[in-house]
Amino acid sequence: MKTFPKLVLLTLGLALASLPLTAASDTAAPSDPAPVARFPRLRAMMIRRMAVARQVARRLGLTGDQMARLKSLRQETASRIKGIRTDSALTKEQKLAKAREILRGARSEMRGVLTAEQQARLARIRRQLQAFRGGGI
Image 1 (cartoon, rainbow, N blue to C red):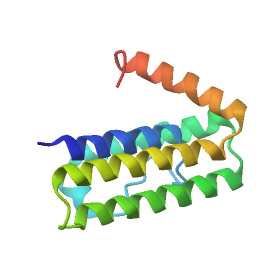
Image 2 (tube, rainbow, N blue to C red):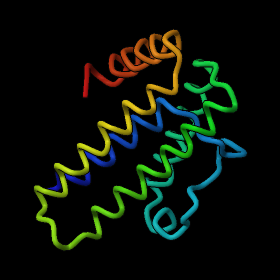
Image 3 (cartoon, helix red, strand yellow):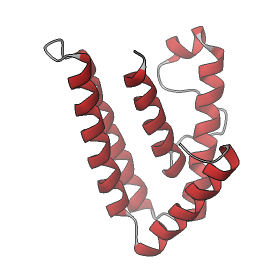
Image 4 (cartoon, helix red, strand yellow):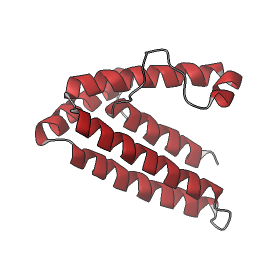
């Protein structure tokens, strides 16, 4: 029943963990304060993910141009996912299938922004994170 939200959170989490965020400080809250005000654990999770994303971006050695391109891709993907969530003509299964398709495409586009060396580094970082988290996702 809750597969779609879990898939979206998991995928966005992975994207955030592997891509930079341009927040000013480590303790910056997400742009919409209402959900995090009601859910302190969500706020803590978002802060942690932003910190991990900044660390991964630093380890990958992303250029300013790459960071800007990745940010625009993330925003575009988020707006497309929101569009699916608000489309009442689709069934839950159709929404899930479309979201998976969009996220797969976005992930490949984002990897296309990285150089071959950065992609290899990202793969190593992801394997390390999976091992740290207990074996896999």
